[in-house]
Image (cartoon, rainbow, N blue to C red; front, top):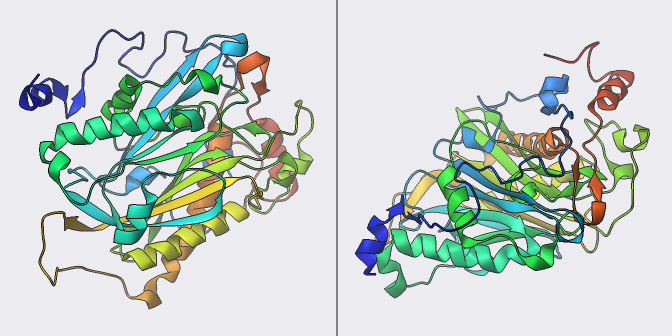
Length: 399
């Protein structure tokens, strides 16, 4: 098939492939397999818990940054040793063609026992050139390959371009709940996550790349939050949380992990977390590196101290400037906020990071996976009572 015919046979540049057993509406053949059917879940603020002082964005999500979209592909099937609880989450950084219109970005590795591909070139150039993909550890190669197919379908000239592009794919290990070695994510699943990407509210918890993740001794997964800062700018965070120990979990300073009673808890190997920060404030790469470091401060305030074997990887990007790939002007027109006005963005970063991680917890349902292993959704009734005890919320859950 000629390349132009291949592009015509795609949906927004994503191949429409047939023959798989997966449905096209982000549902699986057995959507309720392994999930608790009576586990009411909600976001942190629906419990009456507010982190920090700044106002959230309209959706309290990374998609409050205009143009940013998030898509998921959730894979839940099987039981016993071959149970699969995994998936893919994709962040589209803006509404245009990210390969042709790059964004300034920066990376910070708080602890490097994990993988995020494409970072070497990103650190050298200060540019984000691809969507950001989140998945389980053993799926990285599959997702990377699919990402290249997606990008070359949109950009036929890419094969002969210089410098070469390296997709950004980040991972956490989801083997407690999923048969990781069977590598059940397919290229078709990656394309479906891209097709599902949208603005507005973001589905959280056991969804997409977060399907098989556990966090602070409970079910973890995808979480997001945002803040509005002076000047009319927004900053949003999205996390794939697979981190921390129950005894260390804190909410708004409350040692809630030590206060929760019941729920079988088994100490597992140290875990990881991927954190992505986005803002429409015009920032340069060195400033985004400062933002990425403040993401680590927000992670710390949830009780994580970044274990030796934890992969705590942070990416930050700004939509405030779009850098055309083929623009070779020696003095490009670029805007940037003065460093002395960055402190509100730092505050927004710390607050939104905490809330995103906690939203992943409160949104995630109980799920049973590989070999009958169960990750329980954090008990929201106990969360409310404990937070009342410490004077953090009022007398009732907000409906």
